Image (cartoon, rainbow, N blue to C red; front, side, top):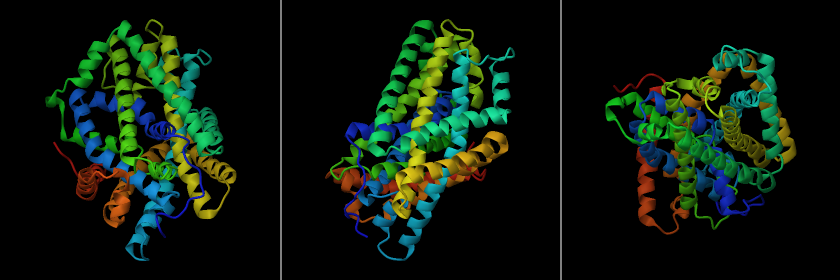
Length: 444
């Protein structure tokens, strides 16, 4: 199948619309929730510096690979990879089938538990609005009660999944692009307002020092591997989201420039979120290494004791919900696009049918916490890294040179650097993440 075959499908209405939608896919709970707490656990500035280096070595090469496969293939994740690598019925076809199936399965499984966590953010928004009371024993008790209440978790999971399906069913331009073009500026605006607030309320100077003054004595091998893994996951790679979004790009799109813009916006938002969160933490004398409970336990308790804390909490949880929503939209679109392109379903039927199936599976995570933990470990430790390696192999070794370099707009030196990274550097580093998550590779 030729990669230049005509495409009868939707396109992004504008370059800005694509950048905001793709950034929305990348910006999620990983930026607002995970990045701050792992930065706190691994000592701040040195970890941030290593993380930025990993974005350059792993994140950007894989982002370009996904976007160019999508744009040249012009179909869902399976169809796009098959279009650009399956020049025969041998290994190229098998690679396309495995990569596509893994990406669709990853999007399906991740969204099923991701929406449960996003639902918890909706609950805490209501707590911040005083519509649901905070436990007299603090946010820790409130969160424990929420996570242990199957019906309440299922309710918020249902609300979040409905919001996600309601966007995807409207299509690429009228649904995804239109909503992300509003949510992303709102998200950035909330972050800036929160940053202005902490600049006047205190803690910002300590936060800046913590995030941007490296202390390499606190940097361990484990921290390096964690930075490498997060650089990969934070850009929404390995699950076919960028391939799917790339398939809606027009033929004259400058893929390299747009991919860099998405990576920069994603990284800036993560750093801004870290600045805001650690300013609150330091101002109230709390511990930055609070771990995964930072957002749902530590911060709500701090909001309750700070001047203007209720307003701050409302804005913060709106921020968290917006970030989760834009990511969830892209996860569902991976699944929906597959069933539209490969099985001929209408967008309406594919969205409600498979969005409903994801919702049904998500009920298991809402009811039984071990299911959520299992799916989280399965997808983030194994499925996404393996998907990333397969995409790197497909782009680096099986795409025709003309397809590989089409997004560099006549910049052969950059194309050569990318080829070296995607063939030899990125796969090795992502494989190191897999070995680390399995406990096989440990660096002191």
